[in-house]
Length: 200
Image 1 (tube, helix red, strand yellow):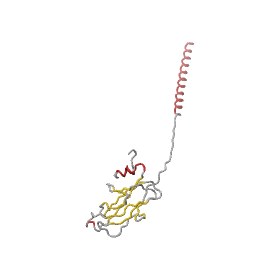
Image 2: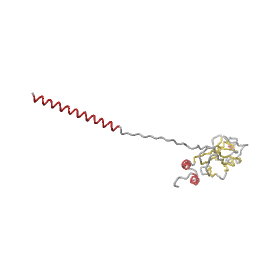
Image 3: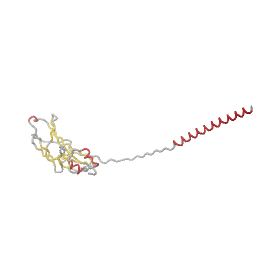
Image 4: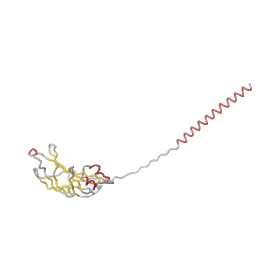
């Protein structure tokens, strides 16, 4: 009997030790896991950028800003209108480049390029746009057209129709090679002068 009791004591003691050891390991594992979870880091910063002034212009006729052009009298093929049409930049504007185009459209929707005389500050490209040889800055007043000629290609079939002359002036920021990217039909020498790509 004594030997049996002694074996039972040893058996209980071994199980207890095993449970205690397992508990310690489990607690250690949990403790390590929690400790590792604390090794984290997050960083965040913000900053503001302020954009420059917009690129805006208005078209002038006779020196005054207009929303539509006025042409007096009945026109015939070859009629020349002496017109002073230009561009006016506002007091606050980002430096820009400029091109312009003229078309004449009748009530049937047919469109024809208009022959126009411009000042010497403009050059005509193969894409029928006139490109301004310079940059546009705040408060600039730039002359564009001096005369407009009604196309001589018009015939009797065009008589009594109403024609609309559109003067389209486009500007684009001068910075960051914008014209070279967007106006890729412009004369190459003009682009190289006013919108060169770095390294060219």
